[in-house]
Length: 628
Image (cartoon, rainbow, N blue to C red; front, side):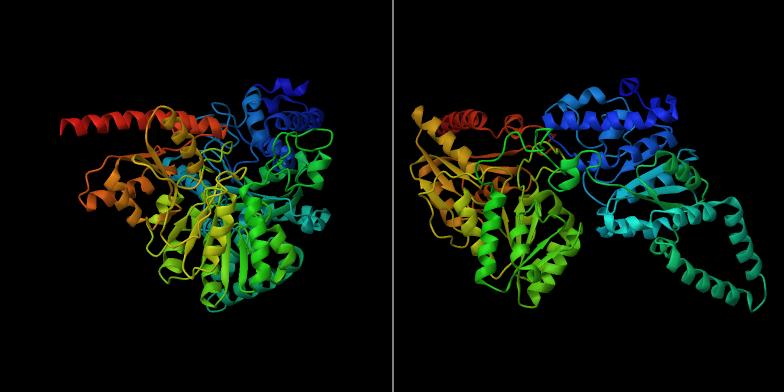
């Protein structure tokens, strides 16, 4: 088996040309087999097998720098750098990450996880190479989807000023431009990268510019004529006009052709973009037919592609999807926005029913927020459905374009809290902190599926900026009997006793219910309050708790810094109320990948850990009271 001969980086260079095709097939079989067990990103990785192999044949790793945009397509890269054995623990706690990690391999030169960052990072490496006298190559790989992100264009604009080699590989799996692959494109690419062509181009321009008066005019005329011809023949004129040499397109299954083009690109002193046409899910029919479903997949049956553990209950995204469809029926002013996540955020049904009121703006969260602000200013009711970890990319727009103007934009913040296997870059554990720092922002979190429905309806009609955060996974269906109408800034009493008060937000209400039951078994009196609002705090309830409770416990699935617990502590301090507050939250740190239940325990917000912490805090508070 050829794959077994790949034990470390650059081993692929020891293979004969005829062995490369066999290796590509073995890598695909390996990925399908492993991901069917662990889950992970399949379609994107199957699409770049040959592209990755060509890059590894071209580069000398880890000396050269290869940066993957987003990074979920780096599985073949991991295999070719000696990490094949790590796939049994892929995305599991303590195991190999599904994204590039500098602490995992010297061949991963930059941690990624969010879109549109690779060109900026690569440009940083290229400039550092000039400043330090390095002689390594720099290659950034970016997908056509990531090019919808404004940061990519900011980097391209800046890259045009670079006078040393920097290769940008456009991994394009959009089939609408497949007709551009062919002999004419290959001929033009080869002609335009030839040394003679580049020398002639520079020489002619230099000579003409020396002619008094008319030289510059002649150069401008030639450029206009040349540009008009290139616009007819060359699909990369956008990049050319930005000052970036464009090569391609090239077939993403042609290892020899890609390797040749990369070598030609390396001869250019300046930024060069190599356009590669790939196919998502290539080599596995179910993934080819349903690339979106196999973008990030759970374990599945290889023969059919069907998930091994299909969901039997609705998740929070399903609930949101149903509510949005109903709101669309009832109110024609309701519009929906997504940043390239129609399926992931549950807006597919809204899109199908109300296509004129649905907007997919691509991977451009900052633009999405200001676009929503414009819609709101014009009298509509925009709902921007977005993952928590992606919304943080638009902080400035939320602050200035929405909240400063008090515009009624609804942020449906999906995947809030710990999300599990995607790890640090995807955990939604910062949104309370960064959203609560913004004036005029309201933040809600539902305890169960019915409350999510109520909160989305409430938010759409609030007439002010509001974020509703809800977790990934199965929607909690407990506490159905507690469904008081939502009133601005008011919490909801679940159990009213004395001494200990559990003040829980969103997903942590379920945990608090378990904690309370265990405390009751041991004889503790304990109240349970569903906070509902992370901002504004229910000050009236907090003041009433201070009268007949000796310990307040706040529970939230957010980092402790800037979270609800800190705000509650400050609330009592500002009023000089001496009352112990135990803030149960995620430590101020990044949380790695792994099963969510394991992560709960590791960060100390599981029911067992919380119960013990509450008992210890009670003993300390009782001891302090007796000393007084």
